[in-house]
Length: 229
Image (cartoon, rainbow, N blue to C red; front, side, top):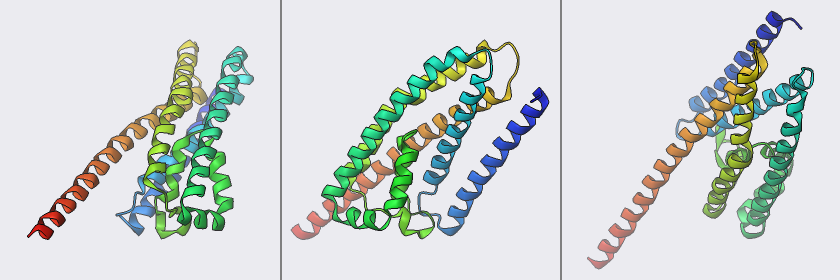
C-alpha cells in the first residue's frame, strides 16, 4: 500500500466512523434531549478507538518496529484480564443484590455478553446499561447507585492500567517515526480524543451528581420543615 493510499484510506475510515458516531448522538438527542445521549457517543468513540488500535497493532507487525509488540501484547493482555475480572465482579454483585437488574439481565443476556466483550477494552462501556438511549429497554437497566460508583472507580483502574500506558506507547511510536504514517497518528488522535471526552464527561457527571444530591438534601430539609410546621 502506497503512502497516499494509506492516508486516503485511513482518513476515510476516520471521518466515516466519526460521522456515524455523531449521527447516533444526534439521533438520540432528537428523540429525547433529557436522556444522557453523550454516553452513547462516548462509548462508540471508545470502541472505534480500539478498532483503530487493533489496526495499528497489525500495522506495526508489518514494519521494522515489530519489537514494540513485546510491549503492546502484554499490555493489552493485562488490561483485558483486569477489565474482565472487574466487569464480572460488578455485574455479579448487581445480579445477586438487585432484583430489578436480575429481571432485566434475564431478558437481555445476549446484550450483556456483547457488552462484557466491549468492556474488556474499556470499562466505561458499562455506562450504557442505564443511559436510556432512544427509550429502548435494552439501555434501561435498573442499576443501583453503589454499582454506578463501582463502575466509576473501576474505570479509573482501567485508565491507569490501559489507557495511559497506551497513550504513551502511541506517542513514543509517533515521535520515533522519521516519516509520517497515517495509521499511528490517527490512533494517537483517537486515543487523545477519548481521554479528553472521558475527562469532560466525568466533570459533567460530577456536576450533575452534586446538583442531584443538593436537590435531594433540599427536599429532605423542606419535608422536615413541613412536618414540624
